[in-house]
Image (cartoon, rainbow, N blue to C red; front, side):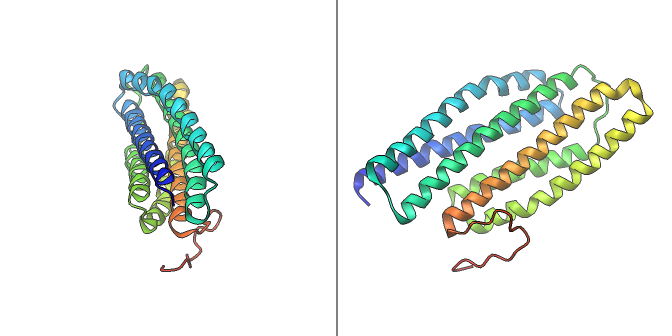
Amino acid sequence: MSKVLQRELESLRERLVAQFTVVEQMTHMAVRSLVQRRPDFADRVMESDAAVDQTDIEIEEECLKILALHQPVAGDMRWLIAVIKVNGELERMADTACNIAERAKALARFPLFQVPEELSEMVDAAIGMVRRALDSFVNSDSDMAADVIQMDDLVDTLNRVIIDQLHEVMKKNPELIEPAVHCFSASRHLERIADLAENLAEEVIYLVDGEIVRHQHGVKRHSAGK
């Protein structure tokens, strides 16, 4: 690898990690706005989205420039492909955080509405997935990434429990339909955050091991050294 290419790849890595950190903070702030009924936190999340969108474009353009100018092969090519995919997932995660923030602002108009207790557990699990996905990328740790994928089952289960409870609330108390719908939507968006963290973990496994694990959950990994 030439020194110029090495410098450009390292700069790209630093920008992607910085983007990852911003998106993680947006996600954390969005769920805090939801759980703590803090519309001011929701506003801060939505204000951050434009910068994430701009960085998303700049990172993709940088990847394309490196591909065109240096024509990398083998591991460098695989790394750039993974970066392009991770970058796109991060932008989608930021958009989903904004969706949660919007639901949080709507739900704040109903301070007496009791959200299901499982929502807090779901929040912790989803945020844990996002943080571990970041750590797995920074540390090139495919085992940690595999753990993130396994964690998604808990989030899915909690989402189903919450939705079932909200259905019952709406049946018994028609006057609570509006806040219940906002909570329903927030739960679905939170489940989407977990799915995106899972996608990021899949890309880390591809980056580290060269193994494509999409659609193979529950199948034993067989890459070299595993």
